[in-house]
Picture 1 (tube, rainbow, N blue to C red):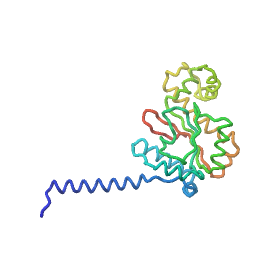
Picture 2: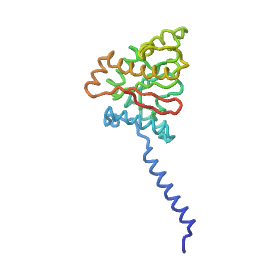
Picture 3: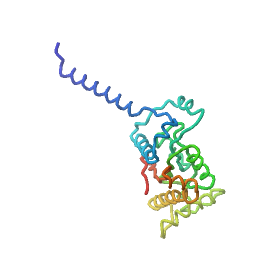
Picture 4: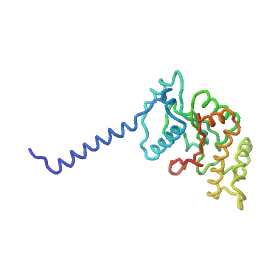
Amino acid sequence: MGISRRQFFYGTAATTAVAFTAQTARANTCTMPTQARQAALTPQGVVEELMAGNQRFVSGNMVNCDLNAQVLQTAEGQYPIAAVVGCIDSRVPPEMVFDQHIGDIFSARIAGNFVNSDILGSLEFACRVAGAKAIVVLGHSACGAVKGAIDQVELGNLTDMLAKIEPAVQAVGPIADRSSKDSDLVQRVADANVALTVAAITAESAVLADMVAGGELVVVGAMHNVATGEITLLG
């Protein structure tokens, strides 16, 4: 019995769709956060994994993990591959924008993504004790903390916190009109703030500086675009 042109077309399309779905499923297999996985990755490999995860996030092709299985997998121990110093902003959850899951990353969040002794101590635990191989300082566009620092907002404890971002405001050079309405200024200060935080991590932590010098750790800056979801490495 012959096959009509329409039957051939639909049969070929269906076969292609099945093959594509199988290929996508293989590419999106959830990787469990095991000690073996952590050991196998290099510091640069960790950064590449995070950036690949962001591309999945942007494209809507995120990995679908069994979170309950990951809860059980990590109950007796954790082997994260990275630590992220990010802003408290609700639009930038590190696990989601890097397409990571339970047990994959440490996340330290504070408005303005700067570091202090408490966060540095946390990063020392994350990297020296728990084995994370990359630290990402993750800033983002349209940052409210950066805007507040530019406008010199004063409000309770927020006043002292925003003062921590003032060095980034000063770092961009002379400012004719210091206003958060200048979106270009806001972005330049956000970029400078990330760069200053990256430098502070190794300048203020001998533990982390030694790990970087020994090739055990990388510290990178990155910027998240809240309008597109895309993350770009800085520097």
